[in-house]
Length: 230
Image (tube, rainbow, N blue to C red; front, side, top):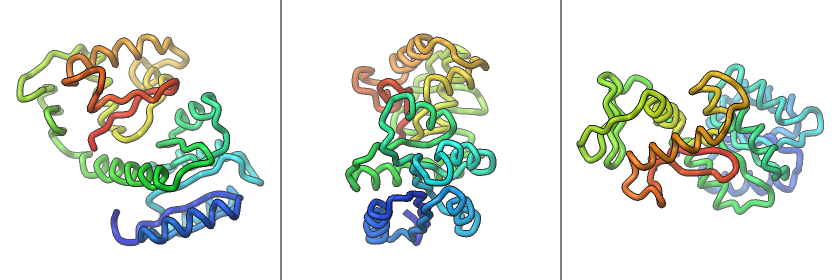
């Protein structure tokens, strides 16, 4: 974590926001708290936070609408922290661009870990925007030559597999839903998630040393996939 990274907490429950404030402040973060969606938007523009923690059940507007508005002008990591634990709620938030979803009640250690993942992923995405290669452990992707190597040996990927891999790497650390992947790779809404699973299984066979315990392509059960380079 960089010195005095700012976390914006948009949460109307004063007990929870106070608990988060105390915990994050001890870790060296500057914490800014908003109790409504409108206040959250104002504080976002004032403090330019590195991460946003967003509750969905706000008194003045639905957090989903706030997330949708944020994503029209910023890629800052947004972690949804909500009591809405239904799978459909998670998928909707992730489809709109949330980086992660933590269900209340939660352990502070888990939330801290997810904040750190979001920060590292954002930093790597920014730093890697102009990189010619992606390298992590035994995997190398040469963007200029469109080559993928495992332990230095070139492997063949189909055009769809290669496009999917690039999408995962570009969003590393972030949960990508089945619908999001279908929209980005095939260009339409509401496709069959079985196709996504087939391509992910194929990618794992080619990239992972143990596809049953993957290093890179992690499954978020019932939601989608996350690329890990940590």
